[in-house]
Length: 443
Ligand code: NAP
Image (cartoon, rainbow, N blue to C red; front, side, top):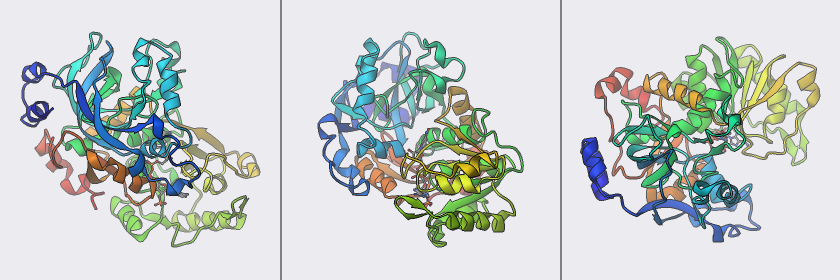
């Protein structure tokens, strides 16, 4: 692996890279099937990803004809890394069992360990016999939409494909490793002005926010729309704020500390609600919501921007959905892609139907949406929200920080890249876009 890494760091020509032997084992972060019961009886917040995530050598899988083998320079922690590591809401081995029943190639995934990670940047080492658009030596960022292109249901919007999956969550061989096998249609060009770790943190969260806000498949924001964004300095929110500003909208960001509020101001989001400082308590007990708190919240938004939000960008779920449905403008849209605080949702349906609001669901992004988002990043219109990088050995600790909501933006992970700051192909473009803008989430 050292020879491969040295060749990439020296920017060796593709022929040289192609001539290097591929190791038959590689370093990876994974959870074990035998550990799925380890946190039984514990509260969610007590479950420590450092106990369940292992870093060790794993065997290299065979490469399918439509796949590429990628040397991973960097990856990132996503909230699905948290879900897999605490085995909630279900152990992810069930996904691997089902994929294993589908085909010869699917069977490779059904193992007693699950290599996690749904983001990555790196260099293509090998391609399967059916791959046309990518070759050894290409520098890539990887998105996580794993689609069966022989399934007709994938061909309108691939997110509606009957067996659409998320790589490194519902499939094995994820990106938190030195090597990964991905479908060739998960590859996108690496933004040329970014480092490996800056290129590795974007695809999952940025593309999800793009579909939720920009795409016709979800809320299709217009210029001037006011958008309420929960977790506005988190993984999804940090991109959502930028997309709203970029599209001529008015973001209202909700966060939970003065430091996060200050970061939002620096990005250009002037309307900020610190939910902790203002002590919003939407639930008076675990079964009862407090409508007066919804009203106080709605009033606060009006004080800040003079109107109700056209769009509410939802993902915390049970804790906030009642307030989100209440706060949206008459005729407005609540767009949701997640339920971090609980998926059994309660809201007052009268506020939905009487005021002609709609709840729209969204999930990751199809290839075209992911590519469109990657293009915005490559053009410097949207910045990476990397706040800190960790070594692959410390994936457990980085995942714990995301689980405990101790992070801002995205946490990167250095895989084959030995240090931060490497991989910039176009330094002039980087200077033109501005170092300060590109690194605005660095702590
Ligand atoms: P993240 O980086 O942890 O950010 C989420 C933010 O939400 C937190 O920083 C926190 O911000 C806020 N938050 C958390 N719990 C909250 C609560 N009870 N009430 C109000 N705000 C709360 O996570 P992420 O990457 O943005 O992901 C968020 C969720 O979306 C996760 O559940 C993830 O699995 C899901 N997701 C789904 C998709 C998809 O394709 N469907 C894609 C990406 C992520 P403050 O504390 O500052 O308010």
